[in-house]
Amino acid sequence: MLSRALVFSVFASLALAGSGQLAPTDVLGSVLDVVRADWNNDGVLDRAVLWQPQAGEDLANLYVFLSGRDEPFVAAGVAWSQFGGQEAWLETDPRGFSVLSGGTAGGLSWQEGLAIAFAEGGPRVVGYSYHSYKANDPEDGFVCTADFAAGKGSRNGAAFAIAGGAPQLTDWSFERIPVPCRAH
Image 1 (cartoon, rainbow, N blue to C red):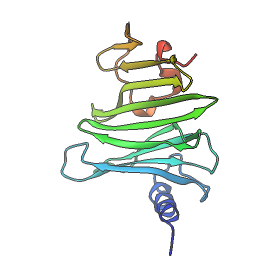
Image 2 (image 1 turned 30 degrees about the vertical axis):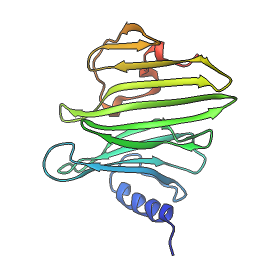
Image 3 (image 1 turned 180 degrees about the horizontal axis):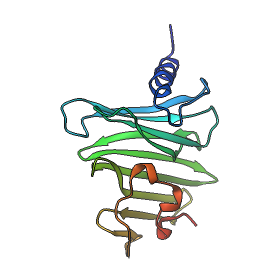
Image 4 (image 1 turned 90 degrees about the vertical axis):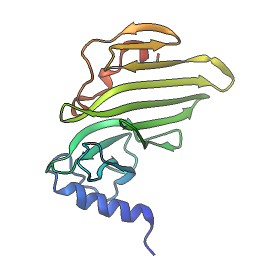
């Protein structure tokens, strides 16, 4: 009997190969997670696929397939694929979905998330969150949230402003994380 991971890997390779963008060439790559919902409100389920291009790769790519669109929206290196023994994952919410990753290393535990919503014809990064703490010193860490759509954020309760609005998912990179939310 075929393993679930192998079936997902083969399916994803076939589904992504025709996209012409960042198509995985290594069959050892794997699907980390898939979520489905009707994000463009046309009555047809759309899907988001979180893909680790190669075994051991640090970053995962995100492919968003909307019905009625030939090419997926692609965000390369959108999440840490594996860290501290935990794989990245996706969760749906009323406005879209979230890309989450986290882990533990050297006593530090952390979780990071991107909130994706659909506006202006495609997926946009509307929010970012980061939470870290040390098991032996829970006060040694921080909580940071950024609401790109509202133009504001908070680190440990201290407010800060964000300029530029909600970026398109395809334009996302770690450099877009607001400075107050970057782990130091």
